[in-house]
Image (tube, rainbow, N blue to C red; front, side, top):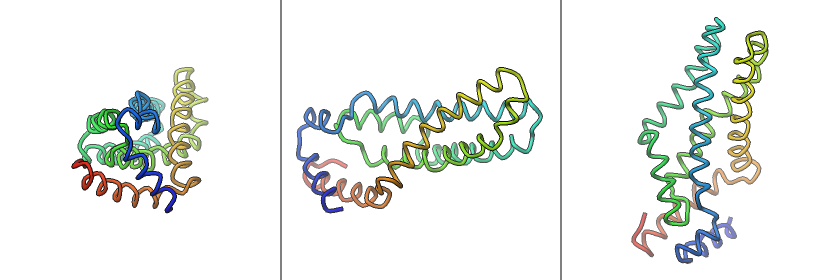
Length: 181
């Protein structure tokens, strides 16, 4: 934990251009946000497919998870706030606190339960038409990448608690040193 904090202080001391090279916070930050929104779009398509194939209970359960996730996004400033935070992160060369928290919330709240439910209900989509099977495959692919990215970061690397503390400390450090949040 101390090593991570020392590394964070070292990165904060770099200039903006050096940070971009060090943190690799370039245009990839936009791709991550796009991927999250694409995941939500394919999940909405899955709800439509459940309804179209008359699996109303599955549609309702998926809709509840989707609406919870969507309401969390709206509660935290709307779907465009994540794009604004991504842009701010790219300009700073460091991920902003809000960007980290918004991405983490989206990966934890919606992607893992929907992925598990999609695998469980996958048999419905192969009983339907080709469109259903292909949309199931695309949704599972996108949800898997989103979920694995979040789970790897939080569980395997053990950054869930450390990241919260470091983000709060880094933000206080940046504010005190550079006059920024």
